[in-house]
Length: 302
Image (tube, rainbow, N blue to C red; front, side, top):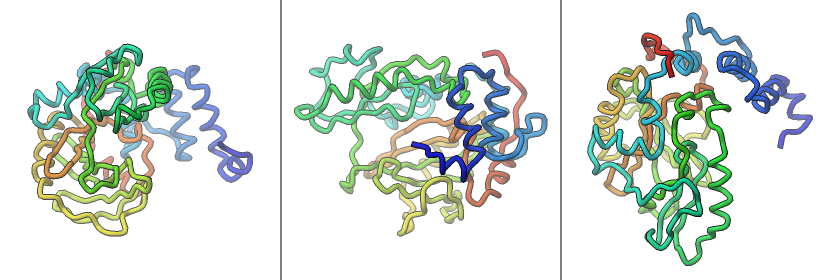
């Protein structure tokens, strides 16, 4: 919870808090302008955007490709990616349902993960059906189904993602620490330029950035760097190849993969990392990432 002392130390957060909690009142552009100012302390330039975050806001408003909802929906993205790289990279899906009560748990394996299709936080993991807390999972997933991702981020594709619950194969880390490794490639016009490796589900997540020759880069966004530098996986070049295919024709997208043992799985497509409100440390990387985005012609009919 925010305290009075927190707001005194961070006065712009008062505005950010108020804007976020009245998000339904604001049209898209005004909401993004206000949110941007209170986040960064300077005005959003949509006429001549420069940095990564400014260009992401521009694309959210002015680059509305009709295929974007299929790319970002957790269910539809499987088909979208499989058509381009093959089914062998897709995490198996056991079913999709509109409501939790529609799920036939007798038809599911002993281990699985439940996710909502339009948001990243609504997951429920079952490691053993005999001890799975269905009541807690129902509360979590039904709350996630009610969340309007678009209203809080103005990532317009989520307006068109059908909200549902999917059951997937539970990917298990062979090292046994409970968190699988993510490899997230920042791609620009079909060219991967930077990636980071992380275990987002870890109790103590660490994140390290690399270029395409596996040179460690001095970038931090949210998490600390690892105490021990991650080794380059044997599958790195294959993941880079797949990211190139999936990002073809897109000014910018982040393509995520999981590596479980020796096997690569497609994770998701992220059009605007952190909804275009990324904290780069050092901040110069905001300009560098922004310089790699060549803004396309406007498409505004969504």
